[in-house]
Amino acid sequence: MTQPKKSVQTALIHSDYTAPPGFAAFPTAIHHASTVLFKDVASLRSRNWQDKNAYTYGLHGTPTTFTLEARLAAIEGGNHCLLAPSGLAAIAMVDLALLRTGDDVLIPDNVYNPNREMGRWLEKDFGITARFYDPLIGAGIAELIQPNTRLIWTEAPGSVSMEVPDVPAICAVARGRREQGQDILVAIDNTWAAGLAFPAFDHGVDIVMQALTKYQSGGSDVLMGAVITRDKALIHRIEMAHMRLGMGVSADDAYLVMRGLPTMKMRFEAHDAGARKVAAWLKQRPEIATVLHPAFEDCPGHDIWKRDFTGAGGLFSVIFDERYSEAQTDAFIDSLRLFKIGYSWGGANSLCVPYRMQAMRWHWPHQGQLVRFNIGLEAPDDLIADIEQALAGLAS
Ligand SMILES: *Cc1c(COP(=O)(O)O)cnc(C)c1O
Image 1: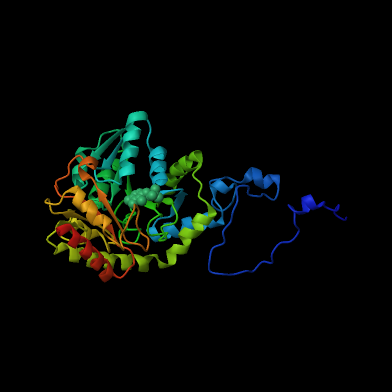
Image 2 (image 1 turned 135 degrees about the horizontal axis):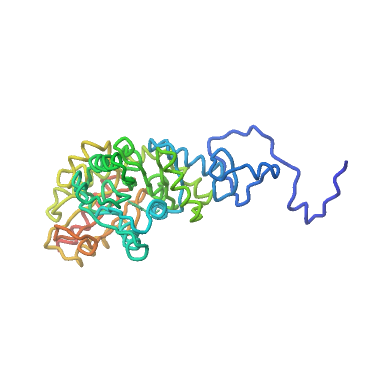
C-alpha cells in the first residue's frame, strides 16, 4: 500500500529518514526530550517511570541523564543516583523527601549557608525543628538526638570555616538508634571532597549529596546537584520527592558535567597541590593569624582529616591578624589580580571571598577577618606573587 503523499507542512515534521545504526564515539549522546515515544499503547501502559531500564518522560530520565547518574554513583561508591538542577535543589529534595511535620533535623553549625537557611525555613513554615550542632561534636551527637530526629546533615569539612567532623562517629550513633527502631539517617554534603577524597558510604553515611557545579563540572559554567545512595528503598523515597517537585536537568547541562569527569581526579590533585603550596606560604606570613586548611595542624579536626581523607582540593580559608579591619582586608581582596571575586569553586580560575563569620555562626572564636581562597589551576607561584603584592598594599 502506498503512503498518501505528505504536504510540505507535514513533511517538515515527519521524516522517514533515520541515521544508520552502529555509530561509536567517546562522548555520551545528548538526548533532548520532553515527550518520550512508546511503540504502542501496551508499552505506554506497562512502563513505570521509576524503572531505569525504560523511558517514560523527559523529566524522569533519558539515556544522557541515566548515564551521568550511573557514573556519579560509581565514583562515589554508591548504587543509585538522582540529578537535581543545582546542589541546593539536591539538599532541598533530601529534606522534603525525608522530613514531615513534627520531625527534627540536626544540621552542623558550619554548614553551607543556604542549607542553614533551608533548615530555618523548615522550622518557620513546616513545623519541623532544625537544630544546629557543633561540627566537632562527634559521638556527642547522641545527646542531641530526640525520638523524632529523622535526619542528621554533615558536611566534611564545612566549606568556609573548614572544621573536619568525625563522620564515622556520628554515623555509628545513628546506626545504634536505627538498631533500636528509630527511623534516622545521616546525609553528607560531600562537595568539598568531590567523591574522591572521602569515601562517605564506607564511613557509614546513608545519603551523599554533591554540588556537581564544583569539581565535576570544573568549568564554572553549569549548575547541577546529585543525591546518591547505596540503598534501593532509600533512593525510592527520595525519588518520590524528585518526581513530585519536577526536578529535571537539561541534557546539555548533563553533557557539560559528563565532559568534566575524565579529568576530574587530575584536576582535583592539581587544585590540592596548588592549595597546599599557597596555604603553606600564607602560614608563614605575619599578616595571617590562622590557616584553616584541613591538611594543616591549625585546622580544627585536622587529625580526623588525616584519619579519614585521602586528599584535600583547592579550597581553604585564612584568618587575618586582628589588627586588620574589614575595610583593610576588603582592600586586600580588591587589589588581587589573578584571584577574582566570586562565589563557587572547582573551576580553573582562582577566587577569593570574604565572610562575616560573626553573623553566620552561633559560636565563632576568632576576631580577625576570614578570607576564603579557592585555588584554581594557575601556576601556584604566580598566585603567591599575586597575594604577595596585595599584602604589600595592606601593610602601607
Ligand atoms: C556550591 C555548594 C552547594 C550548592 O551548589 P549549587 O549548585 O551552587 O546550588 C552546596 N554545598 C556546598 C558545600 C557547596 O559548595
